[in-house]
Length: 76
Image (cartoon, rainbow, N blue to C red; front, side, top):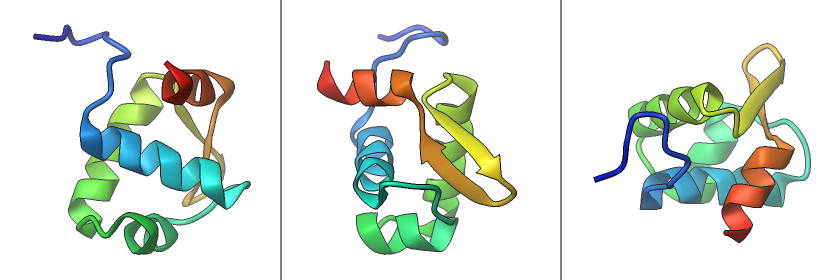
């Protein structure tokens, strides 16, 4: 089992990060839902968790982008 502070990604977390990486810039929840096929509530909870881990940031209100740590996590 992974710990609370773990950077290990679940499949859904990875899907969200991959969608953000492909966007190339900040995008909204709707864009991520469309890119991943995940439910809006799932995307919202995954974004929140990824922000807490420092893998996603929100440079503009209601827009999300992948951080350098997020890029590194995708490669590992």
